[in-house]
Image (cartoon, rainbow, N blue to C red; front, side, top):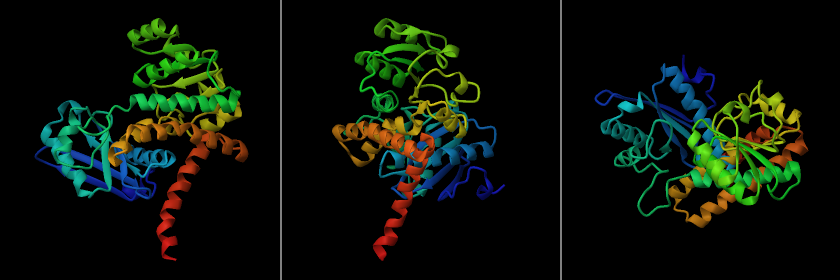
Length: 354
């Protein structure tokens, strides 16, 4: 089957296949859009069952990065790379061959870190290409995106609470946090400081105990957290957590968390709206990480990066207002807003030539 016939092909600008026999490299780099700037998105290394499965991932994820970068108002387009193989078997030679593949696109794609890639891999790739960001580099803003992602989720959650519940603070509200990784724990700390009551769940019982001890949180099982009695449900772990089974059972009035791909399907956004549950689109609220990456690329200082992360609240407030006005789910409005920004950017050269 041709790439053009693939179900997830969305007029991608470039889909490039790379192979290097000596190192065993097999990679796909998908550039969805460069309307707003060079395509940026992480590299994922995974033992895909087939080339088609890898292509599907590259196409979907690159398109998602176009929307994520556009809605964050960043001068970046959307791209993604996948390396076919077991990350446990990666070698420096393979990573350098991959760097050469990135160079073949002549700056149209800038990579960062994703599943299967470790912080130690990034400096190796950087030996072979300058088109890389999102890791600790001397003289540049730090690569750890979790604190800023947590900050973005916190201010985005507050924007949702303001819109749906009319409250300026989370004080006294009950927030159920699913997932206590760096983002979930950072969010829990901020909410605790503001006076929210926390319900938490995670597969790691040590992190659950820490949240209980430090924040007075109530611990429940991972199976219970989604349908717990709360004002806000914050998914910060699994994707597709909002689905046919869970949406009818939700008690929360607001859904606002940092997990990717929270909706099992787009129509579940409409199902949430039908139940009067306000959903903060995931790729909008969790944009702090890509904002950090953009800051490295363009040399923004910490103040500018933080200003852009805090603006996530304003972006969500706009999406919520527009969703009410147009009687559409917030995820649909988020997509339309991103598409409008990309379309406007594409039209600029034509306007200038007139």
